[in-house]
Length: 225
Image (cartoon, rainbow, N blue to C red):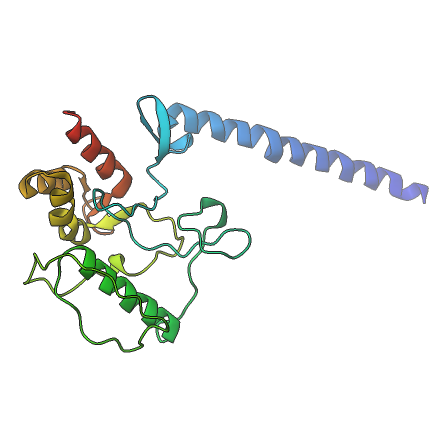
């Protein structure tokens, strides 16, 4: 038994060294580099208004008022499995396949809602009718030439936390937001253009609009900047 003690001592010393390196020195060094080079991102990319934190540019929020731009759907749940959009503590997707009838029904319902809210003509008959249709009073048709709904308006992201929407979806909402706020459509459209992010490195991803930042800019516009 005693002959194993030297080996045990080596193992203990190696364990302590690895714990200090990986559990103390490395995290501290990485934190220091991040705080020195990217302090805003390292601290969560937080967005403040009047000195108060109102969110993060990396995590979406649910907006339902016609005065604001709406983000894409979110399939996140709370700890009990109840739908809770943009729950950062339980990030995840719906995990429904493209042929799943529940997903098809959800997408069709979301598309009808987008058309209804934004003054688009009714869409085609549903492939999978909803189990409990809920008739709603739709806004008058103000965009008769628009029949297609952007895909990000009716599908959730893989994380359920996507803070951005496509430029097409943002522009689709301009008439509704402008009418609700009593602003010229051109003014709201220019605001969308000002808050449009280009493709990363010029070719990665798609042009996008951060919903929270755009909505905060809308509020500032109403307050005279």
